Structures are given as C-alpha cells and as structure tokens.
Length: 241
Image (cartoon, rainbow, N blue to C red; front, top):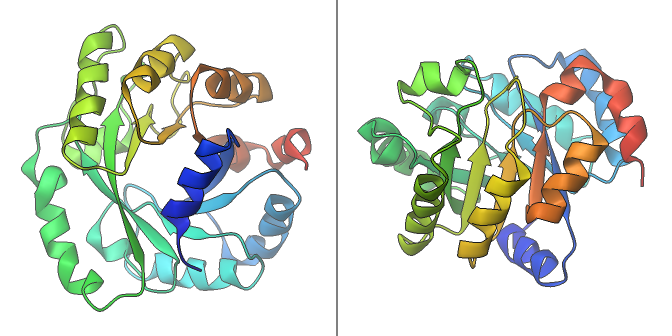
C-alpha cells in the first residue's frame, strides 16, 4: 500500500474526516486480533496505527503481521522507540517530539532509525508531535523525560505547531497522551488549525462520539482513538459505517 500521505491530503482537500484506531502491541493479545479487527473493518475507521511508549522487542512486527491478515486498511507505525520499526507495516509516522527539549526525541532516535529505514519499503511521514498537558503524567512524558505544554499556553501551542510546519513536517499531531483524563479542548484544536496548511491529527482522551464530532468541527483532520476501544469494544457500535 502506497501514497498514504497523499491520500490523507486528498481526503483533507475533500473535507473527508479520517479516523485511526491505535493498537498498543503491549496491550493487544494476538488471539484477540481477528475479532478486534473485524469490528474495526465494520467501523468508520480509515487507518490503523500501531505503537506504544514502551514495547518489547519483536512485539510490534508480530502484531502487524497478524493485523494484516484481517484488513486492507493502511497500517501505520506510531513508534515510541526504534525497536518498534518493522518493514511489515505500510508507513511510519516519523515523530519529532517538538513540544519537548530532549534531543533524543527531537533528532537522536531518528538518526538511530535511519539504518532500519534506508532499505525499507515503509512510507516515511515526518510528523511534528506535541504533547499537551492532561491532568496526569502520561507514559509519553515518563519515557521521553519531557514536559507537556500547559493547556492554557495557547499561543505557545500554536507557535510550536506552526514551527513544525515551517521546519517541513508533513503532519502535526496534538496528543493528550494515552489514558488522558480529558481530550484536547476544541478551542485549542481550532486555534492550531487556523495557523496550519498541513493536516492536523488529534488524539488522547477522546472517549465519546460527541467528543469526536467536536474535534472534527474544531478542525481535526484525523482523530486517533485508543484507550476508549481498549476499555470497551462496544464503542465500535457508535462508529459503524
């Protein structure tokens, strides 16, 4: 599967909203993949993201191979570390944690990844990744040793996102973090979207269909849902095609 970024851009141009289901290799049992993906296929999901902040070696590739048996949706890596890179997926979000100041997550890990990506068939999509405060410490904060941007620092959030675009990022990802106590507020999404000319991804803490609709209305082009499905697969019932 190719041209994933181009297809995202085409959908954005047509005002077609996208939805990704995030699967954490550390939390998904292989025996549950078939039934879970069956529900994904019946939903409005357009992409499957695979990754987590802290995943053991080999788990990601094994999970991706199993997922690919049961769906034709694009499988995109959302890696927390270099060890999660596998050529079995279709694409990778090449994430730079631009909200933080840890050089490892701004460029260091990316240099390490080049040896794996050089001869890979993965579509590499550079993505500016912003962690936004959500009321508790997230695994991203713990692993990356960076602080999220406070929610009331609206202009700083906007300027950071815009800086990512000006640096050449293809996507901007606003993230409240896995298990966030609350989703990123629509007014923050709206302010960021007004400044960008590239697609905007929003994830973390979104647990209801209403929150999805509010995020779309505010300007999110692609929404990522993870914890809501992990805790209650009946959430798919609200997102059928």
